Image 1 (cartoon, one colour):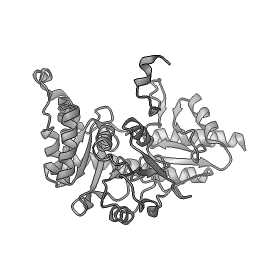
Image 2 (image 1 turned 120 degrees about the horizontal axis):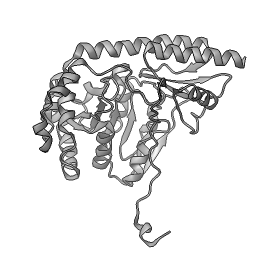
Image 3 (image 1 turned 45 degrees about the horizontal axis):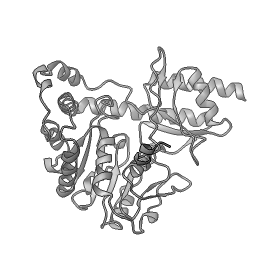
Image 4 (image 1 turned 45 degrees about the vertical axis):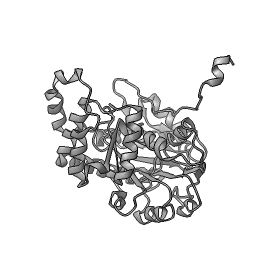
Length: 354
């Protein structure tokens, strides 16, 4: 090791899903929405004022924050926005997890949590999910430096009851509790209704999944006004201009079309429920996913084998080579046509293995 390397902060980085670009591929590996953004988004893109591109964007992101406040019936100072929910969550780690006590999150969960903890030198403990991949709420009763978990969880797709979330909040009133709701629009019960009762609760959501804007990187958090102030103070000390002008305009347009949002969300849910039945008939097992993906395993064929075989056919799903989940595949819900192609592959492959 060279002398200067001794002062370098090293971490094991988060590994994102593959982003292949092949003709004829079926991409079901990163939980993107299979449908285009709302029609108003195209109009918003065309209306962008090129003269504003030379100017710094509004650091308060008021254009988007105001629209979010109207949509969710909140005050503007209860909302924080950032460059995707990853940016929002990173700011939350930096702002609120500063105790010498470890923060708590599940052992099977979004794999960025331990990365941020390592980057920011935050002690942490992973609390094991039970045999059904559900959070054991009693594991979060002990003293800690903060709590974070997705609901529904990723990559399992399992949603906790709101009563469980409230129970965790009641046992952790001296720390900040963050509920990461990237997939809440596809099922489960949002903790948003609890923010007025629990001043230590932050709820984080994103435009990447249900609003088809993963490429624009728009995330946001809801919470007590004081929590939001603390977040903004850290953001302004880190990067005042996190939301660019096109993202503000496009985000507002996406929120404005409620009918399209409901239409595409319901189409994904309907496809998910149909595919559950089809996969069960082929011998796959999985939890009752409330997301836009399924976390599946087969009784006779290893997940890695299926993953590699699918890849040869240009069908991309996600495989995690990690303890407890290394025989599962995470499969994004695509269009009906894409899911029919996936099911046809499984039928053919499993028939040959029989």
